[in-house]
Amino acid sequence: MAQPSFGIRTYVLTYLALLTLLLATVLIGFVDLGWGSMFLAVAIATMKAALVAAFFMHALVERKLVWVVIAGALVWFLILVTLTLGDYITRGWLPFPGK
Amino acid sequence: MSEGAILKEPWRDLARQREGATFGIWIFLASELLFFGSLLLLYTVYRVENPQAFAAAAARETDIFYGTVNTAVLLTSSLTMALAIHAAAANRTLRSYYLLLLTAVIGVAFIAIKFTEYYQHYEMHKVPGIRFESTSPQAGAMQLFYIFYFIMTGLHAIHMSIGIVLVVLFAFRTAVGQFNQEYHTPLEALGLYWHFVDIVWIYLFAIFYISGLHK
Image 1 (cartoon, rainbow over the protein chains, first blue to last red):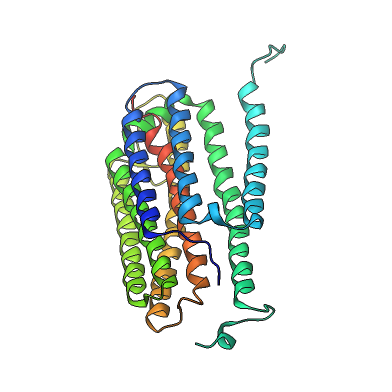
Image 2 (cartoon, helix red, strand yellow):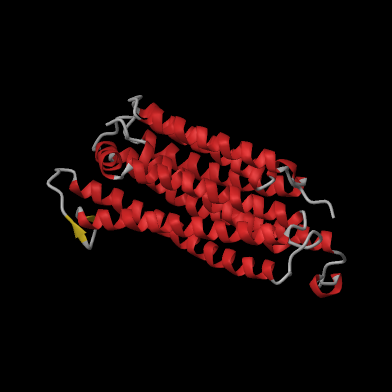
């Protein structure tokens, strides 16, 4: 039965990459980059999440159907984020009388 | 076990049964993404509205040491889980059994560290609604931060606890020979769940511990 899988070496390398990113995010966290700090922290978290999904969860070698599920989940989530933040972040940009 | 005993309706063969099972788990994880994702979004909105208070609370008061150690602990448990499934697929039942037990032990360690931290928050009067004191003029917004913190890490801890119970259960199923090279689909499904819970923590770590660290 063909199952998507990797070798032990790949799992260990993934793990080491994750620990390296963990160290990197903590070290970068001590530097003040303003709003960039939050952005970088989430960006590195996304890199770690992608590594876990691609290798530990075998998403990289899964069939197309699973990719559709992942893409669907992400697209719906991005719609949620974009429309909500599009409202909240832009509040107060335009001067309305009485506000 | 023979194929007949483990092949369920309505699947024609084990390969299809496996595809159905993992597909179902992925759908479930997609709904979990929106569940935790909407909380993350809500947190972001409140953080945008109270940047100083959230940064101050996130920065000084969550302990980066506990957070970092716990992240490393959880990543290690993901590795042992992946190796356990790999061992089951290679018919190395005993190794798979030990690796599953190790995964559960590491999971318990994570919960233990998390609750040590909760206890410290309690000692430091940082639990809104139960024990919260602050002289800061932004105490209200800081309580908001802690509400998000406790709800999100708490939900994550509940997910972890369910995972640990399942891992122990599946370790025993492995020990009595229910899983082998041909059939270990339940282990794969459990692995997907476990890794997903790991991913959730990676984000919680980023928003509660890392951002604001420099302040």
